[in-house]
Each structure stands twice: as structure tokens, then as C-alpha cells.
Image (cartoon, rainbow, N blue to C red; front, side, top):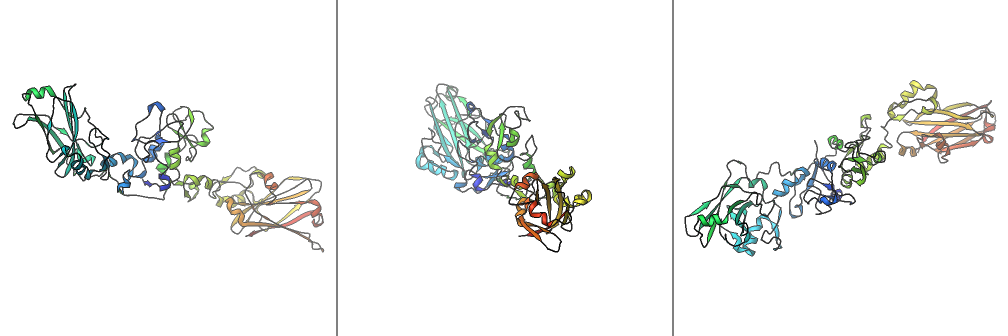
Length: 517
């Protein structure tokens, strides 16, 4: 399975409408009525009836995004499914100062500067050793910063006189996985005394939050501690940090979290495109892409044809999946005629235009309207089919003899197939209401028809040696013959009066030539 990196111009369109970061952390939600999508870093606004963008999330499994800390030096490109873990442990992660009250200190910086900041601006709370004084009588809350064996830890201490409880927790500043390698134990004791109360060990927490989590922190009743220690006037809290022997990993090991290899494959990833398959027409979706209220996507063409989602039967609103639409500009689509050997690969923006004119697409039999033939197949097989089933319509020599009767209209016309310059051409001809009509159509990609012109050369084969010669551009294939004859830039129309003198024993004889320009 190849993974895809995202072009910068597309990446800038994949921004969270709330926090303005990239839509690189899951889950992702669409808010109906807003041309925006929220990433997994932001709280879900339930009152606005968000729709889970499940299709985007599936596609994001294969996409590399830059880390949000790229402006600060992180060069890693990470899969969206791994982004939460990566950003939580990124060495370039930016921290806000955890001094309480939170946000009262405007400092922001990397983890290796956090302790230095504390020493300079919050010196009382910067600990060189894991011991500090606590007050189990009055209400207070502090975040201490501890430098222990060249690692930085945050110690959160809180006393609540109303609940008569004391909480303490330790967080590791840095790699989220490394936090689990440590245990901490809280010991409360009298100053200048060996009497103490030792609490149970806990696993050090990660720095995903700087707030106290009462569910995971060490908690004791403050009045019980004071009673056990004889209600001392002052008390010390000592933190013992030891290795967690049950977790045998290196603190620098980020395997499974950091992904630094950027793969930019031009090949089509069919597993990725499978997730972009419309559940109605089963073709790959390109903009506009709509979404039902349950989060399933549907292409713009099918949206007008069904009222309910074919996946869950919920209603389909006018909600556009803008994030998914933006992603189609860098996902490589294969032409839907790849089974017919078409090698074309392009973005969603260009693929539909190509498919509409793809020379590998199934071509209808050129004689469909004349012989009621339902065959269709590759362009390379058209001539073989014509020789096997419509041999009389093959124009090998370029001369056509039309038995003319003035009072009989020949509005059904004739159709011929001819080869020239290694290409195929369809000639249609009719006589209707005293006018002769010709149109030469190039059988192949429409844009190539401009490279050819055709000549109709009518001679009388008499002693007068009269000749009528006309040249026109070839047109692309036109399904309706009436439209073909009405295109005056590519069709030829001659009145009977102009040709009467050129008729040879009641026959109109003319020659067709193809000229490459």
C-alpha cells in the first residue's frame, strides 16, 4: 500500500475551520451550513449537529501531513491516523507555561527550555530535588517543575479544604511513550522527622494535559494525614521516581509514533480509490461530492437521482463534503478505461475530462444507426469489426458511386469507414430536398480531429473534364447525423443545380481524400 504526500497548495485548503491547524488529527466533523470542517484537536460542538466525515477519515489513513510543529523545526511527515501520538511526543512540541493560574504566564516554547523558564520566572516552583513543602490546611494548587536525571517532570499538587483532600500527580514532559517507563511514589512527612506516610506507586502520566486529573492522581484525606503525623506545623512532600520494570523500552524509542519517511508515489492506489467509490454508480467520486446526515458520501450526479442514502437509507441533504473534494485534487485516479489498456493517470480535476474523450474507451460501431449494430469495443478493434460485419461499408479505394434519381430523396444516407494516416474516419452522405450532404468524422479522441481535413472531388469523366473540388475540416464523432450536417464548418452541402452537369449516366461519382494538417 503506497502512501501519499499532499501538495502544499492543496494542504493549505485542508485546514480546520476552528483551530486553523491541518485536518490531520481524527475524528473529523462537518458542520451543516458551514463551508468548513473541524479536526480531532477541537471539541465537538454537539449543538450544531455535526456530521462525522467518515469518508475523509478513511482516505486520511493513506495520507501524510506535516506535523503541526513544522514551523518550530519538525520535519516529520506523519499519517493522519498516527498524528495524535506523534504530536503528543514530538521533540519540537510547543508548551505553554503551566504556571497556575494557567494562561497567566504568556511564555511558550519547547520542552528543553521549560525548566530554564521556571528557574528564571517561577524560581520557587523550580525543583532541583523532588521535595517541597505542602499545606494541608489551606486551599492551594501549584505546578512544580522538576529536573530529574536530565529529564523534566511536572508535579501537580493540590489541597482542597472543602473536600479535605490532597492530590498529587507527576507528568513526564516529552515523549508520550516514555512516560510509561516511570513510576512515582508520594511520601508525606514531618519536617526534620523520620515519621512519614508513604502512598501507593503510580505510573507517571504523559503531558497531554497540564491540568490535574483527579481520577488518576494520588489522593488522600488531608485530615487523616495530619492526624497520622501528629498535626505538624509544616509538612514535606517527597516524590520518588523509579523505572517501571514492566515497561522495557528506550525513552528515545518512538517506533510506531514518528514516521519520517515521505513517500510520493505517482502510481494509482486502488485501495484508496475504493473508498472514493460512489455507492450508486460505483464510479470514483470527483467534485461535487455530497453527504448524507450519517456521513456517507455520494457523487454529484447520483445525488440528483436518489432521495435516500443507499448505504444507510438516511436522507441526503445539500451538505457538501468540501474536505473530501479538496483531497481529490492530489489523489491519482486511473482512467475508468484502464481495463482497455489506457495508461492515463491524473487528479480528480482532470480525469473526467479525459474519460469523456479517451481513445481507449468503448467505441460504438460506426454503422450503429445504419445496420442497427449494438457492438462496442476498443478503438483498435473497430476496423476489424467493420470488416467482419460491415464489409460493404469499408471504403478502401476512396471512390464512391451513387446511383442518383432526382425525384427520390435519399435521406437515410450512406455510411462508410476508411483508413488514412494510420487513423480511422467515418464518412456520412445523403441526398435530401435537392441537396447533397457530406460529413467526415475522425474516429478517435475529439481533440485530434483538428489535425485532419477531407476533400470531396467530383469529376464528370466526360470530354469536358469538368471538376468540383471542396475541402473541409474533419469533425469529431457526432452521434446525431442531423447535427453533423448542420455544422457548416465541417460539413459540405451542395445543391443539385451545382452538380447536375457532373452526373455521369445518372450516377454521382466522387473521390474522398484525407489530408493531414
